Length: 398
Image (cartoon, rainbow, N blue to C red; front, side, top):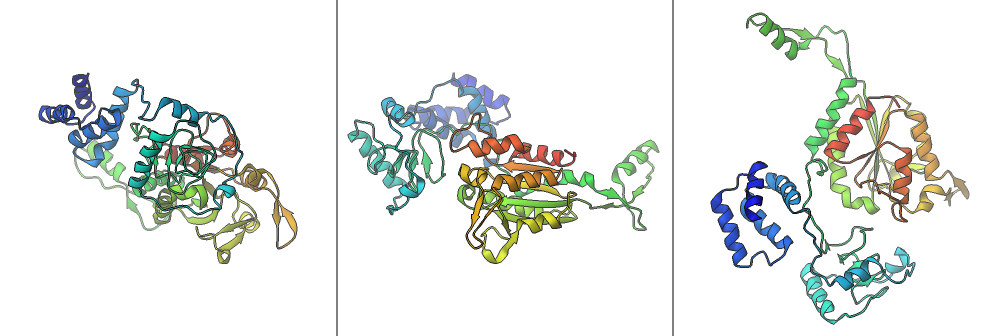
C-alpha cells in the first residue's frame, strides 16, 4: 500500500526520494505515527514535503489515496453517538450560556482534563459544565458555549473552539483555498475589461499588436500604439463585520486592501454592517456611531450603474432578517433586513454576494438565513474560483 502511495506522490509532482521514503518507514517502525491516520499524515508531511507551498498538493494526494479509509478518531464510539444525537434538547440560548465567566485554560490543560474525563465518564451528559456533553458550558462537546474549548462531534456554530477533535484536514485546498491579496487583485483585474478606450493625444504601447505585426514583418520591429483605457467601473463594497465574521477578519481585510489598491475602479465606496443591512451602514468595521450613514442615503446617492459586492456569511437570527426593526430613538418600526436587501437587489442589476461559508445542502435553525438568502442572491464562495466567477457575473447585466 505504501509503495503505491509513494508512486502517487511522485506522479502528482512531489519530489519524494527513495531515501526520504525509507526514513518515513523507519519513523513508522519507531511508532512516531502513533498508530493513527492523523499521526501518519503529520509524520509523512514532515519528511517528504520540502516547502509550505507544497502543503496543498500533499493534502490533495493524501485525500485521493486515503479517502476510503474510515476515520473514527480516538474517542469511544458510544460517546460520539451521544454527542451527535443527544437524547434531550434543552433549548438553551447563547445569552443564557454566556452569563457566567470561564477559566482561561491552555490547550495542554484542556487535553489533560479531557483525558481524565474520558476515563471517568460513563453516561450521556447534556447541559452542564464538567463532563463531555452538549448544550452546556463544558469545554468539550458541542452545541453549547465555551470561549476556548474543544468541539467534539456536532456542527460548529460560534467558531470559538481552539480545536476540533477528529477533524480531517486532508482536503484539496487549491480551488477553495483562502486567498491572499494578490489573488484578490488578479480577480479584480477581470473588471478592467469593462473600461473603455478613449481618444487621447497620449498613446500607450499595444504590446500584443506590436508582437503580432513584428512577426508578420519577418522580425522587423513594428511598434504599435493604442488609445489608453479609461476606468469606468464604480464599485460599492458592503462588508459584514463582527460576530460570526470575526473568524474571517483576516480574509476580509485582504479583500479590502486589494480593492483599495486596485487601479481598475473609477470609484470604490466601502461600508460595513453587522449580520444584515438595516437602516444604517457604517464607514468603519468597528461600526462606531460617529461613522453611521443612513442606508437610504446610500441608495439615493449611488445609482444603478454601481456594481455591488456584498461580503458576509449570511448567518444571523432569523428574527433579524425577517422582522421589522424597532427604532428606540424614534419609537417606530423600520423595514426588516430582508426588505432592505430586496431594495438593493431591485436597484442594482450588477450585484453579487461573496460568502466564506459553503451553501448548506438543507437548512437547519443555524443556517436557514444563509439558505434563504442564497435563493435570492447570486452567491459565490469567497475563494479563488468563486471570486473569479463573481467578477465575471458582475460583467453581465442581470
